[in-house]
Length: 444
Image (cartoon, rainbow, N blue to C red; front, side, top):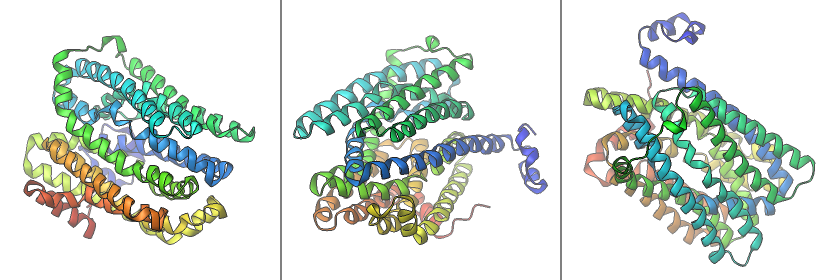
């Protein structure tokens, strides 16, 4: 067997994996990525709890509002290129340097546009609050470093996530240490925004280092007009879809701040963090499975749909394993971790955690749409979720506050992850597959 880690497994599992080198690589890569996300999400979660309690609902709400506002413009950086980059490298490894170089040039341009758009919008829309303007500007500056995330796509295409783990963990440990030092020294709210940008910069530097350590210097990447045009042509529906995703995932916090107040944003943001801390699990599975889904599509429809159903089943099962216990313990978790000031978030968590099921299946269905190159449907699915979220927020927030945002988010997640399937005849089959996964997620 190629993978040395399998010797630590029980004999009956080793027998099932014997000779299945592709599956071994997927499981091994998932293990690395899972350990990385578990460490960063777990340790980061507790550091964020400390920050949340330290700042209190009002200031934490203001910081969350600024982060959500800046996030609305982040799709201008990646432009939905990640899946396209992985797909093209898997299809034609000889185009790697040209694909990565052109993608890097595109995303660098997008980073400048993202920062300018965030600053301009904040100046026009938030001119009455200079402190939030500063917070938005500092956080949005991370857009100058995010383009180097295209390097991660190469490691994902090679199913070698462990190298990215090292880079991200070092950046995370340094930024977490800074945050703890700031709390202990009574730092102001704005310093925490600076640390968020510093972490993005450190992560970019680390990825450059590990990329070059694999014998792939940045200077070897090439930018061509033909490849850049091809990438943009394929990615624009994904870019618009990503924009729709960010809007329906973050617009509720922005609208809540504008319509109710920063304190309510702070309480609701606690519910969001408790619900989203688990997102790394379907993300790890996605980037480990996606290359095999692409390859299965090239072999046969039968293999493609077989793997796709197993993928849907797996993410649904994992989502249930998280949602059920969190629903039962939600109030106790909020009171124990965040304190009485955030107590109202308990009931919000009990409902919002079920959005994780739809988010997981949404991510899985993205693999299907990307493999089929149905990017327009991809776009419509997320825009539909965005419209549902904004519409329901406008109706529900003035009356129900944070709980109204929970209802709007759940409806939007379902539309973007499952409901859209029944709007188009070609996606009926995958819609029924997702339904089957939600009802009976059999993985063996």
